[in-house]
Image (cartoon, rainbow, N blue to C red; front, side, top):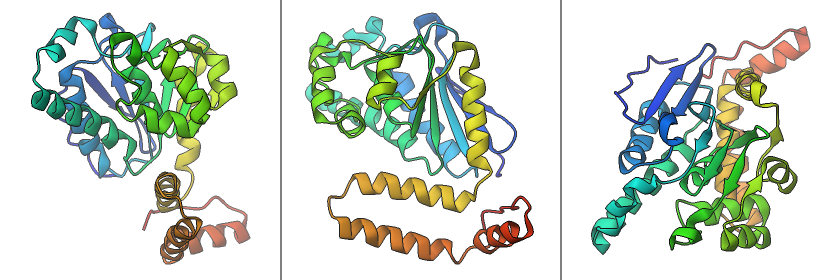
Amino acid sequence: MATLDLPEFETLAIEVLNGGIAVLRINRPERMNSQTVKMFTEYGTAARALRDSGLRALILTGAGERAFCAGFDLDEIEVITRMGVREFLKFQETATGGIQAIRHLPFPVIAAVHGAATGGGMALALAADIRLVAPTAKFSAAFVKVGLSVGELGTSYNLSRLVGPGRAGEIGYTGRLVGAEEAVRIGLANQMVPTGQLFDEAVAMAQLIATNSPGGVRMSKRAIQRNQEITSYAAALELENRGQALMSRTEDMPEALAAFKEKRAPQFTGR
């Protein structure tokens, strides 16, 4: 893995664990990890710093015990209301670009969600590939409660693809809370684990991902994401076929086959 050259952050914290796994924490626990204008900029900065690091997986979570991310800090909301249309559009592009950069990281992102994940916090959780939740997790697309719409920060796109347009509409139009059990039942979250085990379970899943071919996992993520964005089955097959053709030329595929025959663990290099 390449050495990480990490900038200083005001609202985020990055920790590198063993095995090519890192943790990105929303780091405003005193404000329930609520978002600020600065934080949206730092999402993009963090994603750029991590993108070419050679990481195998990233865990996305909130600092402290109260919340994953409670959406935009209402103490800063006046900043938005004072913006002109062009200034607000520039802010929106920065905010959505930061979350998009996290979503498009080439390796899997696992969100470990406890407490509130509301508004922009829900959008951030939806940008992850996998969501593990504690029983305390509460999702809310609360945009309509502050005069905005669910068409915010990628929420309308990601939510409807996870739970279907009907459920997405109901959740988005009401702004109601979706608890952890319901989130798992409707496909908004993957799995619920005890609060005290949430982070360890996220690390265990990241470690399991890291046992596999780096190129294979990255190409799998690319295929899953891109095939959500096209409507043609033929185009999906074309993308898959090209990806598999490329993967068959790597060193990891013959190593995996040899390891299987020799009944040993493969030694993947990512080359």
